[in-house]
Length: 207
Image (cartoon, rainbow, N blue to C red):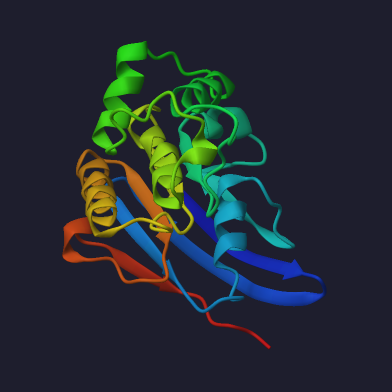
């Protein structure tokens, strides 16, 4: 379903990685592992189409995502290592704005249901800046219950989450994969058994 072919990434005249190839099929979870500065975020941004590699290509169902970006983006859900929320808006308003950007129609009841699932009952209308870092992260994670997307690319999704939040996210990732979805994620901590079977792709730090 998603294939990276001989990717090379250069940042500030330093080669982060070169000739990187990988493939992830439907129903698979890939854990990208490596030290800080190895290029994990850069690799994920290339896989989403947000960044362009120095060389190589990313293929979705055999097509270069640079040539068919719209059809690819419609099936993609990307969460960066930052929550990507507006502190002046409530959780509900943040999600409503995000869904409009992605051209996804949702009933208000679905929004409340998603926030309930991530443990934010009673906090739906509070400006996000008044929430804790973990609660702000949960607002972003609620998107995983709202956008129908085959491919999830998650950059450090466990950031600021407590034990219960991590368990909830791993369970959600596992259920997505069991339904035939794809998950590609990075994390500073190993995935537990709750996330289900997964493969590991290691990036080494290059001097």
